[in-house]
Image 1 (cartoon, rainbow, N blue to C red):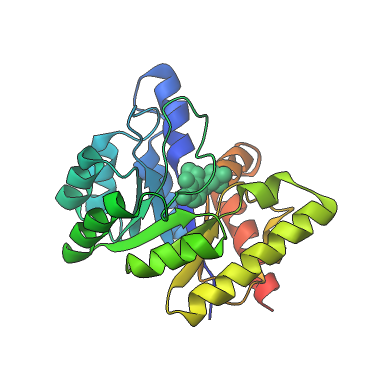
Image 2: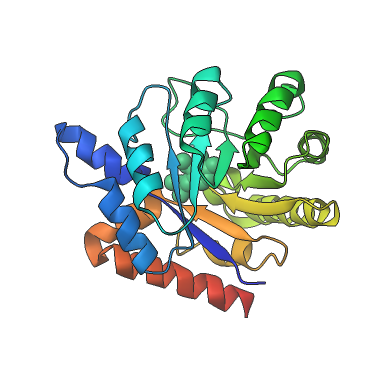
Length: 241
Ligand code: PXP
C-alpha cells in the first residue's frame, strides 16, 4: 500500500492574514502542492478563522483536482460548512479558542453522544469522516462504535519527545494502527512531522496517509514548496521500502 501525503496549507493563510491582503494565496499553494505530488489537501477552518477562511474552502473545493480534507471542530457551524461544500473528507478535531495549534486528540469516548449524530450526518452526505484521536484503545473503540471509517492519530506527543519516551509513543501509535486496521478502520497520522521524525511513522505498515503542514510550509521558505513536498514524499517512500 502506498502511503498518501496530505498537505495542510493552513499556514500559507496565516502568512496572508498577517497583512490582511490576498498574498500568499492558499489555493495557489494547494494547486502547487498537488503538482508537486501531494495526494490530498488539508485545511482547518477554525472557529476564529485565524488562517483558513470560508471563501478559501469554497475555492479549494472548486479548483482542486485532488481530494480536500476539511478539518473541523464538532460544532453545528462547522457541520453546516461541511454539508455546504461537501469535501471528500472531514476530520473532526478538538478545538480550543486559546490554543496555538490542535493540542491533543479528540475525546471520542467522552463526547460519544455529541459526536454520533454529527458523524452520521457527514456520512449520510457522502463525506468520509475521520476522527483525530490519541493512539489509545478506548478512543479507537469509540471510533468503531461511531462507525468512523478513518482515524487520524495525533503524532504531536511523538514529535515533541526524544529517546525512550519517543520510542514508547511510537509503539503506542504502531499498536493503535494495527488495532484500527484489524477492525476495518483506516489509520492516518499527523501533527508535528518533519524530515527528522517522519520515517518511523511512515514505516508503520497500516498507516495509509500522513497529514503534514507547518513544517512543509516553513521549509518552503528556504527551498520552495515543490522541493519540500518532494523531499518529504521521498522520505515516506523510502520508509515504505
Ligand atoms: N492533522 C491534523 C488533524 C491537524 O490538526 C494538523 C494541524 O492543523 C495536522 C495534521 C498537521 O500538523 P502540522 O501542521 O504540525 O504538520
